[in-house]
Image 1 (cartoon, rainbow, N blue to C red):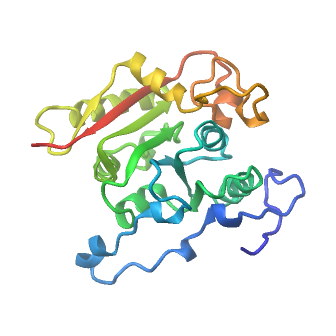
Image 2: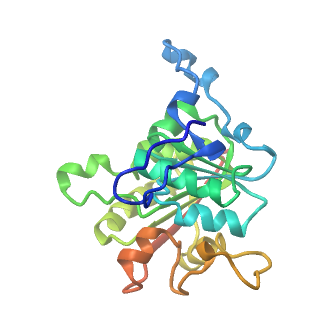
Length: 259
C-alpha cells in the first residue's frame, strides 16, 4: 500500500497514515457489470479478504475512528470484522489504527457507502452480525431520507445475514429511535416477507456489551480496551458526547428464514 499524507482534522497528529492490508478502497473492488441482471452473479464474498475466511464474520457500518472496531477485535480474536466507512478521513485513520494494533489478519476497513456496498456488492448469507451504532440521526424532516435505517437497508441486511444472524442497533437520539420502532414492528411482523425476530431490551444490551468483553480478561488490557463501565458500545462518539447522562436505546433483530 502507498503511504498517504497526513489527514485533516488533526486525527493523525502529524503522522503519515498507512492503511496497510487493513484498508480496502473502492479501487480494489471489481467493476460492476453494465447489465443489472448480472449484478447477483457478480457479488463478492468479503470473507475472502481475511487470512482465515472460515472464521465468524461481522460487519460494522460506520466505524468512525474505530473505537468499537478495535476494541471488539482485541476482545474476540476468533472473529473477522469488516468496517465500512464512507468518510475518507476516518477510513484512513481507522485502517492505520488497526494496522498499528496488529489486526490486519482479521480486520478490514472498506472505504465505501455501507448501504450501497450491501446492496450492490455483498453476497447473500455471509454475515453473522451487522453492527449499526450511533448512525447520523438526520434530525430535520427534509433529511429523513438520508437515515440509514429504512426499508431498503433492512432488506439488504436480511439478505446479507445468515439465518439466525443478528442486526445490532444503538442510538442516543429519541426521535430517530421512535422512527426505528415503526420499521422494527413492520419487519418483525409474522406476515413480513423477510422477517426478523426482536430480542428483549435486556437481551439486546447484554449481547451488545458482550461484543467487547474478552472471554478471558487480561490482567493489563490494552489502552483501547479500557472503558468506563457505563459504555455500552465503546465508540468514540459514545465516550465523547453521551457521557453516560442517559442509557442509549438498543435493539437486536435476528434474521429468520420464512418457511
